[in-house]
Image 1 (cartoon, rainbow over the protein chains, first blue to last red):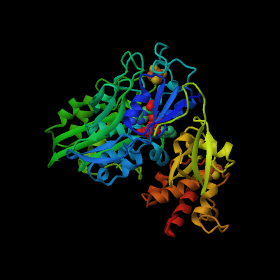
Image 2: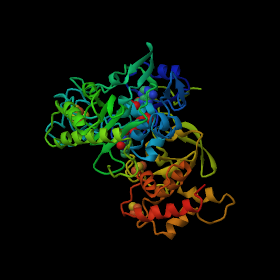
Image 3: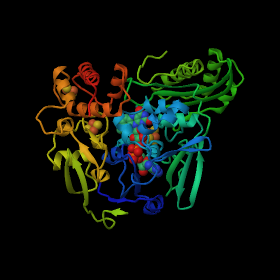
Image 4: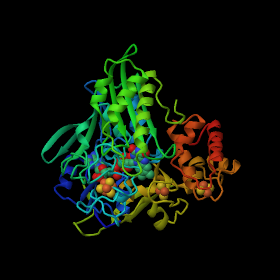
Length: 337
Length: 174
Ligand SMILES: Cc1cc2nc3c(=O)[nH]c(=O)nc-3n(C[C@H](O)[C@H](O)[C@H](O)COP(=O)(O)OP(=O)(O)OC[C@H]3O[C@@H](n4cnc5c(N)ncnc54)[C@H](O)[C@@H]3O)c2cc1C
Ligand code: SF4
Ligand code: FES
Ligand code: FES
């Protein structure tokens, strides 16, 4: 790890000021991603701004929804009684990720801003456009089993690794940020971005901005939802493919559908055309297959990750079936019903 | 209050206070020292193990204010003011009177043969206590999932879960 300065502000304004326009300064919250990357010299901050003492650790009622402070830990969020009751999809997605120890440390803001787990991004001896713009992408034509099948570019095929964010995308959360230019709110769909020709940029957070909260709207889809995560080992592993599915039903007819995928793209992948297709249709396997086909129509395999396309297709169908039946995937009994 | 390590580029150490296994300690630390390295390299508390140093194995699990975390992925300065419990302090947690006996989870690990080489064991023990403090896991499946952040290369998992279930049936840890 490199040497750095350390500051510990106690207000958001102090934190924003401490970051200033210094491109080598970083906020640190749980540290579970940043310290890992610092140990590999992928991150070499000149200054760490410890934001753990900022007053952003509350979950509050707001406009019928909930406002989640950026420092609420992943564990506190997943086990909060209001979240479990009104937004069980979010609780399940969080509990599908990482380990209990990591969730106890990891923060809401940090989870949104965690970097990709692409092997080459982590290995400073290899070219990587995300880590060092212009050097090339080692994953294209390399070991690409965990990489993206949707929304890739010729410059980067990395995936966003978060589980929590897949649920937040399906729930249409809003990210509230504060910066030198003042405060603004970013719809979740616009928070993360596709790699395009600038894969170094994971999100649309502007330089100097801090995440203050993540706001959940009132609709929580508590009746019909699931988070189905498929991975190489049943626990403590990142998703190869994951599905957040949420439905509102009138009898057996779909009134509203939400569908987001993890592990397949540079951002949580939500396809509103597929959601619209489901609307008004019966909640049957045929409908779900049609939606899955639509989501994956544009999917593009790399050299060894083509299996993800069929895996995603089946996961979407199964996830929507679980949601329709009101039998969400258990995050401890790993059998998939 | 804004705490600052010094002028930009200057490499200062920072004064922090930690209560480790019940003992209050004033320490000067470089900001890049992880909690794990502080415990092992500076304080000779080598019970806590370094397996991967990247959050992937759980060998470094300690309790911070009663909550289990990976000590390899946190900086010591960030824990200023906290109470830390390592495997060396578990017995003291259960028996504040200062008897020599073990923590119930340690006794149960011995009873159930819940280890072979023992390298993962301090992390497993601290993690078990943290898990019981959390109080969410009830069934065997839930215990397995809640303990999945602790890898055991020897594969002692079955007996580890037996040991934990045993202690939970006796009314849990403290
Ligand atoms: C072994 C391992 C397995 C894992 N498995 C999973 C998994 O299966 N699923 C999953 O979803 N995740 C997984 N994770 C990732 C984990 O969820 C993230 O590391 C964690 O959520 C990051 O949160 P943090 O608070 O620790 O972030 P930090 O490491 O503190 O920060 C991460 C980044 O966010 C920035 N940041 C933090 N807070 C703010 C803020 N409020 N405003 C602006 N910038 C901010 C920091 O500057 C830094 O760049 C795993 C991690 C490890 C180590
Ligand atoms: S996929 Fe993206 S992160 Fe991975 S090597 Fe290519 S450019 Fe880097
Ligand atoms: S040493 Fe910390 S998790 Fe492996
Ligand atoms: S007892 Fe050897 S690693 Fe667990």
